[in-house]
Image (cartoon, rainbow, N blue to C red):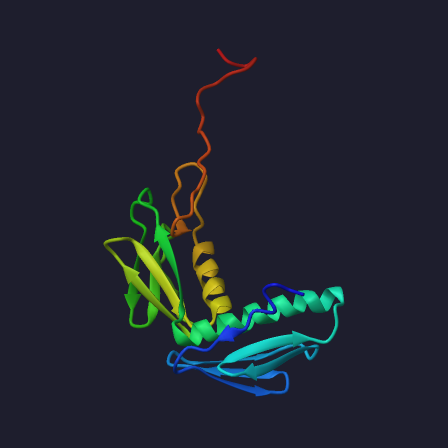
Length: 187
């Protein structure tokens, strides 16, 4: 049996789960999430916990069992505490900065124009000029990660000086530049 799939999900205070067939709705203090699960996976209450079971031991169903449990656990965590992803603008990036314009994130990344990035539903931005960080927050872990990746993609760290936007704690391995001419054509 799937070790992750058989673990029950404890519900924190203030989180309510509604099961309607294969549609599961999770409500909490931070918001509400809905997801349609595969009908081969059964979601049920057991005391103050949510338990997922599968119909057979087929390979695909075993994989779906662990996946479904992880997705539902992320939904419960999201509506209870939320998720954040922190991006850094590297120190080498002179002139690069991020600031808030209302709810929108305005980025100055060395292009001829500033980039205005409006947050999609369920996402909020925060920019700190002193620490040069951008915080992406929301209740849906998948959406928070996707939006953070899209912001990073606007100016990913380049391999020679390390300029650009990176995830907090991300290590960018720098390439050596031209060290001098070597080989047959050198004078």
